[in-house]
Amino acid sequence: QVQLVESGGGLVQPGGSLRLSCAASGEVFAIYVMAWYRQAPGKQREMVARITSHGTTNVADSVKGRFTISRGNAKNTVYLQMNSLKPEDTAVYSCRQVEYSGLEYWGLGTQVTVSS
Image (cartoon, rainbow, N blue to C red; front, side):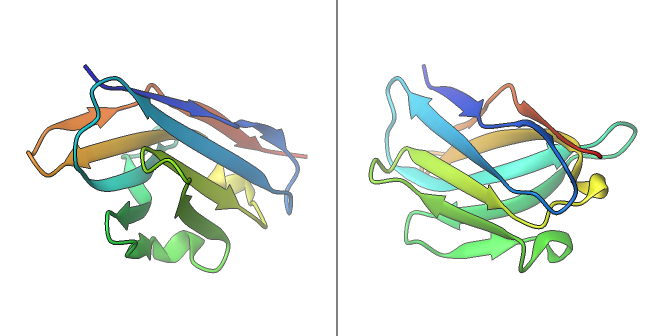
C-alpha cells in the first residue's frame, strides 16, 4: 500500500513563498506522473501542476510563472515551490501519484492560507 504525505503548508502573507513536499512510501512501483491539486472552499478541485517520469512539467495558467514543480533525488518525492502567493491561492493542496499500472493514490492534503 502506498501512502502519500504532504508537508510545508501554513499561513503566509500575500507575496510570500512556501514550498510543499510530497513523499510516497510503501510499495512504490513505476510512477507515471505525480501532481499537485488544490481545492478551495466552495470550489472544485483543480490541478495545479504535474510532472511525468520523464520530467515533463505542466502548470495551470493561474499559477504559471509563480509555481514550480520538481522531483527530489528520490523519484517518489515531489515539490511545489510557490512564490508571489495571492489570497486566491488559499486552498488545501493535495498530492496525487499515478503509476503506469493505472493505480493512483492521493495524500490527505496540506492547508495553505494566504492572508495578511
